[in-house]
Length: 264
Length: 268
Image (cartoon, chains in turn cyan, brown):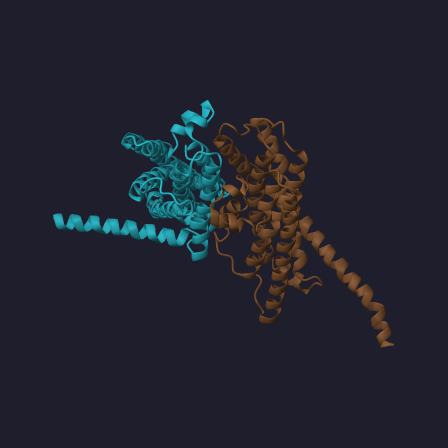
């Protein structure tokens, strides 16, 4: 009996992973060598070079900005990936079929997030390694950075759920993720430290993914304990994920109704 | 008799060909502005992106640097919008030409594909110039204008930057026409060209290998002039812009030959 349960669970995990891989192949349009290299490797590295040079130009040192822009590279990949994983259903004219299918839309969206979380991790790590070589500095050890990045991409996936919900509502596929990326640039504490934001934006910033990872980075660079901010970050990520679940549910219901009325 | 006739008609024919080429070029410029000037992506690229980048630059500026909008900040931020909008708009317009199969008609015309591509490119450059005043208005309202703001360098440098950007991105136009389009293939250009163009920091602040590559980018020379360098930087920028334009023309002419000889499809 126990063996059967384990076998069923194993089968469910395999099915979930297979579904995630299929969605990545079918719905992620940059899944070709040129597109992937250009979008997921070259673009974030170029951005990270520009921002890290900005920090060094103003005498702030490369360390913090190098880590921040690499974390942002990982987060950006998750946000774009999750938006495309849902929004491309519209581009490929399969949205109606998907909405009409008995598949649980929330579970499907979470499943589709899996490869993008991994992808974001790979992109963020590549950016960090390449920029560390270019600036000949390794601000924090690779395992420490990898741990911070893992937390960052997970919490961004929670935020990404809301962006995926938006992709069900907006016809222009890129408006949601483009805006989300700009919001992350300004409010996540990565490129603009919280103490340099206007006062009214600080509460918003503390509610954004990555902001507490950046607190942990600051603590780590100052050789202080950094565990507590990471716990807060995970709580923020869970809150975003819960909000995302509600948004996806509502957006899927609205999109289904509009589809039935022929107005989608 | 035949010789005389040929001699008499050859000049008007050549004039007609040049007029036709000019008309195709002008038509392509107008088409570009008519079709894409008010698209949401164009507005997003030319205004939202540069303002966010300017905010990041401003927030990172430490004591000793101006806290108000300087010329290089205004043009550099606008340059990011120009870069993004030129890439997006050129991509959309040339993919549209491919999709509508209008390139075959252009190929049969006296000027070939060159005036169409150059016209589209000029249209995107003109369109991207809107980032210059648009960004300045927002930055002026947010941070105020610095007392030492050099208006001449802002205007001349800004216009020059848009054409320099378009000339470099023109090579992308050739790539889009020559090779089958794959999604995402152009996304990396924004990050790469942004870093190489020294838009938000002086060239000297870039890592050593990137600094060397930046030397061949006309935008880096324009930005250097805006930051106070001598007129030789502007001349270098003009020369490099001309060089990139010539490369685009040669590449498109080469493409025409390949299409004619090898029946390369222009709609993939």
